[in-house]
Image (cartoon, rainbow, N blue to C red; front, side):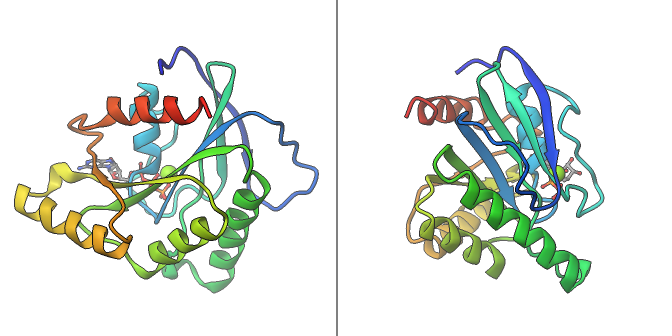
Length: 194
Ligand SMILES: Nc1nc2c(ncn2[C@@H]2O[C@H](COP(=O)(O)OP(=O)(O)OP(=O)(O)O)[C@@H](O)[C@H]2O)c(=O)[nH]1
Ligand SMILES: [Mg+2]
């Protein structure tokens, strides 16, 4: 798949029955705070800051939807499982994520679940994985920011994730070093043919 054009489409921050969702096929990016969701989307789009990134955790509290090639949605979902935010805010965001995924279940062609290679999968990641399984959503698991690790550390992080996620294929990426970005885009292009 080639990205020819990307436009910001809309931002959703509350469960709103009036929100209009059409039948466009969609890819969503999901993960804990600061794992590199927005950076990965920029890398895929080949944009610098169309998708807002931040060194401050918990920046993205909305589902930010982008229209790609005037045909597909690529969506930056808010993070989950950031305990420091407090229970109430966390519940609101978890509610938004689960509502969004359920609402768009039939048009989402791939969920890109991102795990920080240095931090490893946490309980909230496992819970999210199970939630995606229950919804029967197609998913792929990415280990982000591998430029920060040695080869040996990458191997250990991969082994841990493989064990946690029932021997699914896990893919290490880096937006900074442009590792596996092109390949991921090809894969996403294939899933959008379904
Ligand atoms: N070393 C390294 N840093 C990265 C990489 N990808 C992202 N980062 C950094 O990680 C931080 C968080 O990146 P974001 O893309 O904003 O992460 P996010 O998951 O969208 O964060 P929230 O929206 O807060 O949930 C930023 O400081 C990025 O520069 C990578 O491949 N390598
Ligand atoms: Mg973000």
